[in-house]
Amino acid sequence: MSNEPIAVIGAGSWGTALAMVLSRTGRKVRLVTRTEEEAEKLNEERQNKLYLPDIPFPESLWSGADYDWALHQVVAVVVAVPCSSLVDVLPRLSSSKVPVICASKGIDPMGLKRTDEMMAEHIDLDRILLLSGPSFALEVARGQPTAITMASSDIRLAEKTATLFDDTNFRIYTNDDLVGVALGGALKNVIAIAAGVAEGLRLGHNSVSAAVTRGLAEMARLSCACGGRHETLMGLSGLGDLVLTCTGSLSRNRRLGMLLAEGMTPKEAQLSIQQAVEGVRTAEAVDRLALSLGIEVPLMQAVARVLRGELDIRDAVTELMSRPERREFE
Image (cartoon, rainbow, N blue to C red; front, side, top):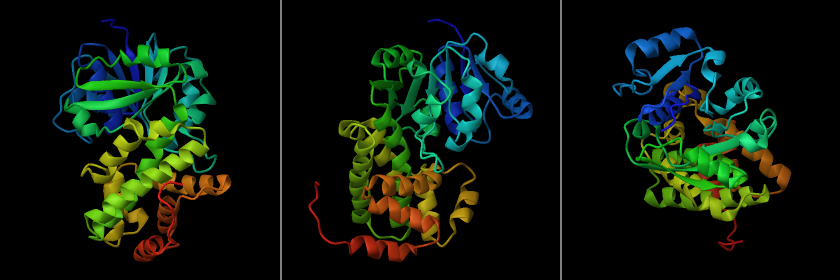
């Protein structure tokens, strides 16, 4: 195994988990924090007590806040920050010549840009990759079996870069549909909020299943309208991630929906969770994107209206259930 270092930008739960995967076989990994104080704490405690407590760092994983140090002679860069932070991180990578793997999921609600589009403003297309799929950070950090998708417009680049993650419990499948992978990872968070609401209102298993199934149809409809492939949404970065996020107890977006059902405001719910909940920003982006394309995505648009305070949660359920009958596949 080559011991060329890899930089992982973002020391939250997901960035830390990916850094641990990359370093488990002894590869040098530089985990980039926001401040030197954070880095010193991680290096001293040899774990991320805030997000992944009691899971020790491999010996080859070290933290720092200096980008010059982090990017020096690395073989690849992994970006795992909240989608809202990409605007600050990506310009720092424009002069780099190595593959950049974005593990962030979301859509910019202002420019309506996907993660791959945000990357393309600063990074050459032949260096852009996306990492997405059903993967709770805690389980990845613990070394529990995980299957995930790596996408690039050049499938050979995806195949080559995937070999950097040589942990046998972290299996990567490759894909050349950047649009589909980017949207699958983003849109499932909105559906998970709806599933959480159904759970919180105690509407039953049938309602959660309906949210997942009709949510998947909306995800595929919007993704295909943007140029993604339908089959991608049936894979790990679409259906796989959707099922996990809508049903798993570790899902922040599902948890936010449950808190809304309990009567919290969106702001109160996000403060309670204390981590980025990407579905909130993405819901607003989806609402605007669907309108601009003339695409019907009633479940996701209802979530956006609830989050804006325009629609009561129970009224949203009534409204969705009273929509006129239509053919299932059209």
